[in-house]
Image (tube, rainbow, N blue to C red; front, side, top):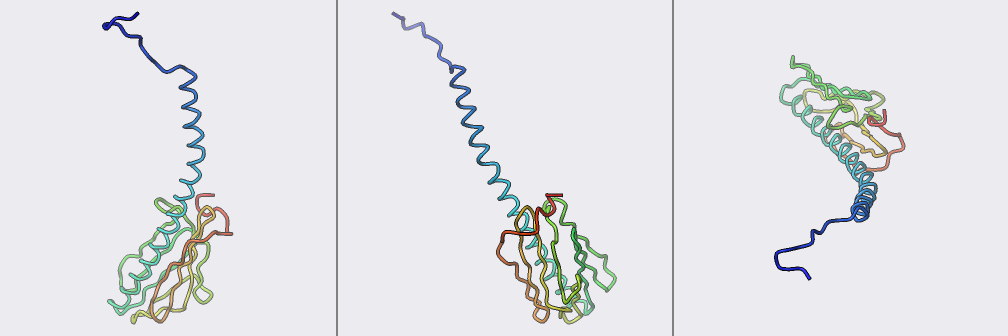
Length: 164
């Protein structure tokens, strides 16, 4: 019989510790792909919002300066070039935080969108950004300057910038 002053130390057995580690490893293996998928979705949506905002800003700049502003898209970036002497801005989408690619940009057969001094675009168009199986379309109305990013969708264009 044990007295009040004595106690038996209790500890976890090796088997119990290994079981807990196995459960944690299994849960992590299930969670990591979902987290990575969520991150890809966030990156595509964030890049689409950035492009939409920059297109709107370019139109506003064209109106405010009464001078054309050109936006040129490539597979990895886009450049906003005001014609009134301001420095061009290059946004590289394959860098952090976006890590996406411009899978297509079409404005009447060209990858350039030009807003004249009245804020009217050169042509209606669509820009598509994609990464890791997800894509988002950004549609631009040349006359009104309206810019709308579509809902995220599954992409058939492959891995995008992270798959390089």
